[in-house]
Image 1 (spheres, rainbow, N blue to C red):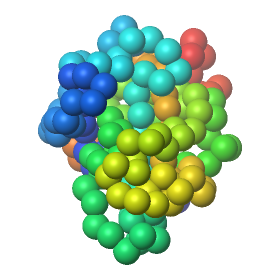
Image 2: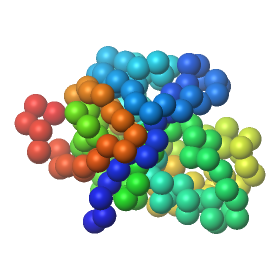
Image 3: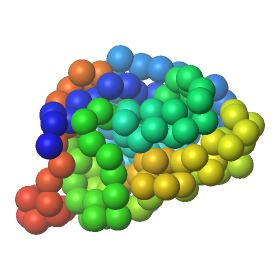
Image 4: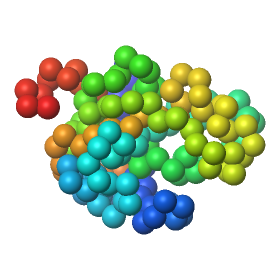
Length: 155
């Protein structure tokens, strides 16, 4: 497996608000990404997108789109998610996230580009939803590590 790396961070102040790209952000179990409207505790607290999966969806449509158009919070490179990742832990900096489920594309993706929702469905291209297990500061460029759930005794 190649090295996983945090490539991007984005938040939004409200449901349909524009995405704000950040270089670093505090993540907490209470708020998710500081300043993000969806941060309340729950299985959809933080969304993570694979750079390779996003590129595959864009390639399928023959388009170039910035990753933030997916409206995910974090972009990682070096890995593509699958159903085998449910329950696994993703450590980025000091923060630890538990992967809870696939992020299904919403109607908003069709507003971005016709066919994008369909292109995001195969092979978990839309990314994953996570719950914050341990907070910490994350910075673009941080190394990310996938861990089995048993790696953290109190997770």
